[in-house]
Amino acid sequence: QSVLTQPPSVSAAPGQKVTISCSGSSSNIGNNYVSWYQQLPGTVPKLLIYDNNKRPSGIPDRFSGSKSGTSATLGITGLQTGDEADYYCGTWDNSLSAWVFGGGTKLTVL
Amino acid sequence: EVQLVESGGGLVQPGGSLRLSCAASGFTFSSYWMSWVRQAPGKGLEWVANIKQDGSEKYYVDSVKGRFTISRDNAKNSLYLQMNSLRAEDTAVYYCARVGYGSSWHFDYWGQGTLVTVSS
Picture 1 (cartoon, chains in turn brown, cyan):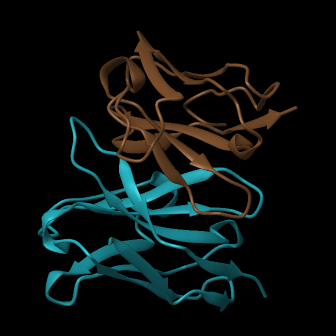
Picture 2: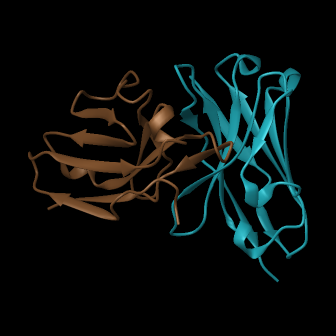
């Protein structure tokens, strides 16, 4: 059972927008920055968003991040079949003194 | 170009030991925190440990405390994970990851991973 809660799966049609939620608590998301990772099938995880809403160079602006209270959200617009992947949120947990990941969300582009 | 190359994985019996290595290149290794993150077959990501630039601070997930030790050799641009008293539940792909600069920790570069299988 992950400290951060993500929906197991989401789906949307090509060209549409999807959001993936990440719910935590005051000991993690509520008082720390969140990052998001994309893991395409059979590949290594890749940083998508850090510090809640910053994109590393090379990440298209179709990907966005936001945080409100103890929840964070990853948004993806203009969905492409190549976006089909597992997405993970992560942050530091002050109570555990440990980094925690969400359980992951599988995105299907129908 | 940042490169992280893990090695040392393999098949080990329960209770055994293994030492993973990660060779870093393309950046000033001694300037970055480094991490190990693992992924059990078909499962999600699990952070294992972090180490500060000079090795003076280390953090571990509870499930490996007292069994695993993270270390580094800045002269060799290398990160290590000594794993003792291995259990079946430690079976996973182990990734070496660089902790990026920003307002908080995040993992900006990842190696290809090395598979550790704990089985009799």
